[in-house]
Image (tube, rainbow, N blue to C red; front, side, top):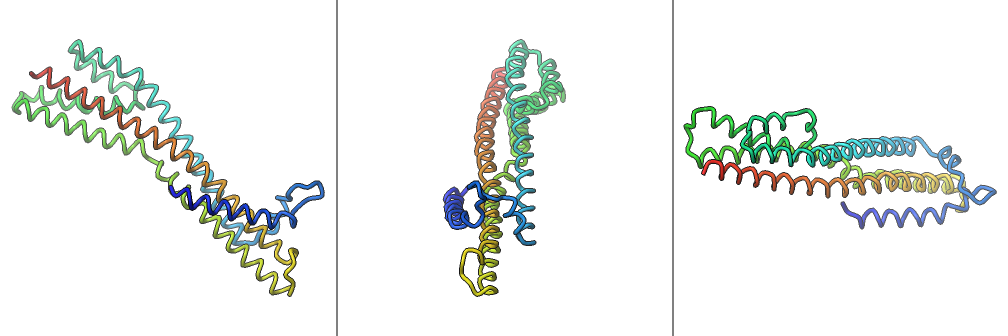
Length: 253
């Protein structure tokens, strides 16, 4: 995420806010936001609708991912010691049954461990035609595939937040440009350069810039948080994969 670009747009929006505030001040000293929206043109309204859709989309993705990540962490904490106990006692079938349980359907560790256990069981039940090293290689590749698929599934929707966070300020900037154009049109039509002639255009620029930043900032926050959680999950899956391979190496020694 390019934070500098968002910061520059924010500073520009604050500058426009300082310029336009007198034109939209109410008698009590506050801003007439309703009046701003009423003066927006069709293009500005279109940009605003797009930004609202982006905002709802990013919030929906963030809530869904936060819930999924929370369940994954909670279930994996319960799953890890139980499957470790089964493997320590040599109960492979019980470990597989535990990994396929609906109680751990969100657990990223259960998905990775299950792939390794099922591949090892298949090789054992197929008659042992492969050499020990070949069996370990097939188990290792199965675990790697499961890790890649699980990581991809966990990352689902997160890149959308990055896209929204990086593009929303520029969508708002589009509305800003349209507002400035309208301001100059107002000057040209009235022949006056006073604040009254440009207030409508400045209001569009102000609202669109603020909306763009309002959408982008939470999206960036959610993206950074979820990315850090993904890195943690990837480390957990890598560690579990290594421990499972080590278990099979000792078991087949």
